[in-house]
Amino acid sequence: MLKLFGSTTSPFVRRLRIWMANLEHEFVNMQIFAGSDRKVLAERNPTLKIPMLEDDNEVIYDSRVIYRYLNEKFDFPRPSWEQENQLTLIDAATDSLVQMLLLERSELDTASDTMYFNLQRERVDATLTHLNGLVEQGHFKNWNYPAICLYCLVDWIEFRTLHDLSEQTALLQFKLDNCQRIETTATDPRN
Image (cartoon, rainbow, N blue to C red):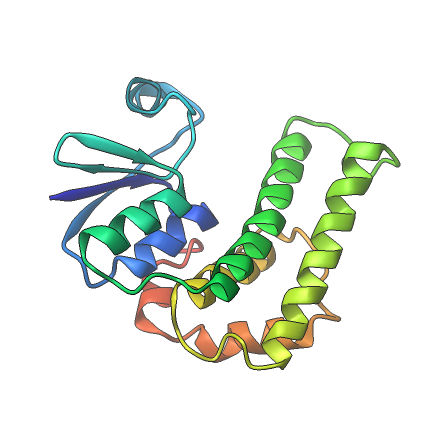
C-alpha cells in the first residue's frame, strides 16, 4: 500500500493528500524537526524533507516527483507544458516562502534590506502577481493538480500570515471558491 509521509501543515504534503484523496494510502503525520520522527526521516530520505512516498519498498522524494510517479503508476494524464509552467510558478513562490519562514523561525530579521531577503520577496511578489493574472484569465477553472497546488499555496500563505494578498483578489476568490471542497476541509492545517 502507498504510504505518504509528511506533516499536516506543509503545503507540499497537503497538495498530495488532496490529489491522493481517491487512492488507497496511509498518511503518516510527522514532526520532522525533532525526536523519533526526525530519525525516521533521516533513515529514509537523505534530503531530510517532506513529503516522501513509500511504495513497494521504494521511497520517492519531492512532491513533483511523487506526483509524476503516481501519474505513471495509475496511468493518469500527464500535465501539459502550460501546467508544468504553472507548477513551477507555484513551487517557486512556495519555496521562497518556506525559506523565509524557516529563517524567521531561526530568529533572523527577514524584513531586513539584504540581497537574499530582497530576492525572495521579489520572487514571491512577481510570482503571485502572475498567478493572480492567470486565475483572472481562467487558467485554474478545472480542479486538477495545478489548481490543487495553487489552492494549497494561497491557503498556506493565509494560515501562516506570510504575505499580504489583499491586492491579489483573483487568488483570494479562487481560494474562497474552493475552500468548501471535502478534500480541502479534510486537510485544513488549522484542524
